[in-house]
Length: 346
Image (cartoon, rainbow, N blue to C red; front, side):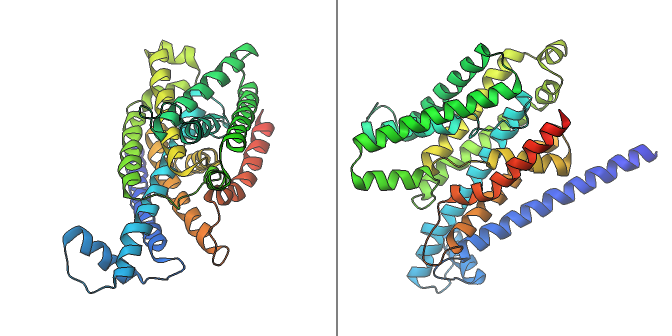
């Protein structure tokens, strides 16, 4: 009876934490819409949203209405979906590779997606056939295959996979820099280099219509494989002995992470450390079971990215800092802590 009571208390605590996380995410999005060079009260923000969604007739200036709906709200929603996608990718890669340091940025997937997107933008590869997201997806897949090939050749241990990812990331970053410096004019180079550091400045509602469904579909696919992800914690042989189709699960989930990473990179550039730090924080709060870990990771990533966007707009007066710089300022120290803990536990 006590065990049943404890289990019920655990579920109630989890439900309360989930509700609190959703409320906090809503608060962060509201703050992101209100805070900026032109401060807009939360009440005015709510009225602007109600005017557009439900056709209410609150009297607002056209400037406030446009700032809230056409600029800041779409930016906050893209930030939330991008953070959720990158965090999920990190959690999935850490489970599949059984390496706590795995994430799209460290493994070079983000760098490959950046190279693919830049090749479409600057060189016109696949113009008329491939869009920016498609080019980023192809680059992400090529980068992952290259890192996988290198890791297989050197033994495929956790540490060597990370080293191969770092090498692949440097390679694709060098290719991106080469394309930009040799083929782009000065204006294009400035815009692309700022975008590569992570920028939400150019996102609008069409990006919301792409990023949010991709994040939701990716989340559903990942949640459909929670049993397999839990089994992977004991190794691929153990997962196979439990009836898991190891190869199929790997193909589906690696493809899902590549697609989510590519969609994020094509819209906001390469943003690091989100997929590394957030899964570890969520694991600390809710434990390693992926049925709880994945929702917590997605919510945590969304909250973190919206918060990072707010910081990027207010940390320097009259200037917007690339959001990738903000995530790196928080993520790099966390990466050092995680690396130190991994070394101590080895």
